[in-house]
Length: 131
Image (cartoon, rainbow, N blue to C red; front, side, top):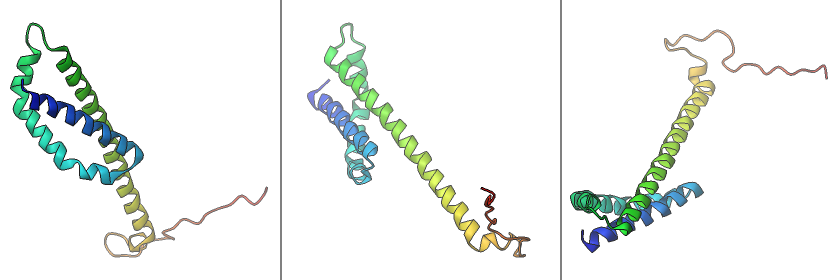
């Protein structure tokens, strides 16, 4: 395994650490800025996969390489978890916005066939005045 391949592992691990920290802070601009670099490093590691696998399968694998790969795997898993959470949150926001738009827009007054719905599209709030 060559030094540029080891450097790519280290660089991708550091990039993922920064990206994970940015996701936790909500700094999406930093995530967008690192996408192309992450893709380049990923392509480099994909090309180096046979050499990495061979180095790890050796009778006495390099402990530093094993540590690097373990750290990279942990960052990839954390990144995937964070990105999945962001995707679910964004999907929830889209659904909630559509629900609000339907409730307060014309869809709340007229049905799918264009006929007026029976009753008030916005339910009247009832308050307990006995207190």
